Image (cartoon, rainbow, N blue to C red; front, side):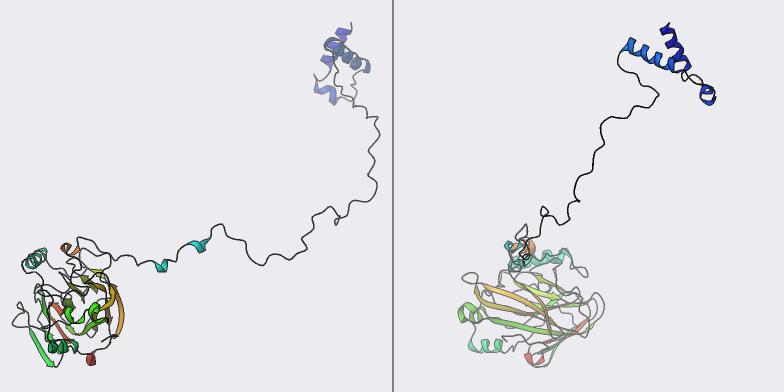
Amino acid sequence: MGFFKSLKGKVDVGTSDQQYENPQYTSGTHDELSAANDKRRMFGGSSRSNQPQAQSSAPPCSPPSGPPPSSTGKGEYQPPSNPPPTSNPQPYHDWTSVPDTSLLPPPPSFPSEFSPTNNASDEAADAAYQWCAQFPPYSPVAPSDSLITASNNQQLILERPEPFARSASLTQPRPQVFHIRTKPHHRDVVSLSNLPLYFAAAHHPLHTERPKTIYFELLIIKLADANSAFGIGFAGKPYPPWRLPGWNRASIGVHSDDGRRYVNDSGGGVEMLQQPLVAGETFGVGMRFSTEAKTDVTVKTRCFVTRNGSEVGGWDVDEERDKDVGGGEGIAGLEGEGDLYVAVGLFGGVEGEVRLSPRDWSYVPEGI
């Protein structure tokens, strides 16, 4: 009978919402207890009742005695009594161990294959190489005292080149000054001095124990168009008469149209001046032969360039370069072991004044 009462209690509990909504409905206490007892008897354990649980008989926890601990208790961390360190800690990497890069040599200058302005033809370059192979460079001469004096005083004469057009003029208005004028479309040509400005036998620093500097300037009076330019520098003889200085063996040059420098380089040269030279400007080129020996016959040599009375840059002759530049001849003849002549090249319609005397220069280098 208790079992059926248990089922009745299961059915009566939670099967109709109406039971909770009807205040007159109440479940008998006997039925609830009977159902709970039946569950315990059949399944064991305890059964949750809808009645609230009895309160625990354990006494409540009493509050701790005494006030809360102070915020400045002795157990807290206290700052050190000593002052903080005055220097920063060592960095993770000792950068002072890195070598000073200012002591390293400068990066190499990279030549260009072509000039951004004007370029001679490949045929002209090939012909120049063949010409140089046919006519080897002269050995240094043993000059007389009078020739050495003339060279020291820069009392030289610019020679009229063979391919100079009849309409072109090369005159000497006063001592050590030469005036050049050509018409547009003039072919490439170079004029060399009659005497070396540097005699290897007389001026070599390993013999004289003194450095030697050579230099000259050119005033640009007129340039007909973008296809007209001057190139000035130094060269050993013989030199191809249709080639500007710097394009072939034993020569250096700076060209006005692209502002680039050339050292036995028939390609595009190396950047030197930020802007091309124009009419009204004066530029000069020089070489300094030091007493620092490289071999038994060569010395450390540096070139420099001036513009309107100021030195604007330079380079070492023995700077790193592509071995194929200049047909593999390198810088032979440019480190004090060979005679060097004033070289003035041009093409197109130009007019200028070559100045060999310091009294006419806008810049006078030390050692002249």
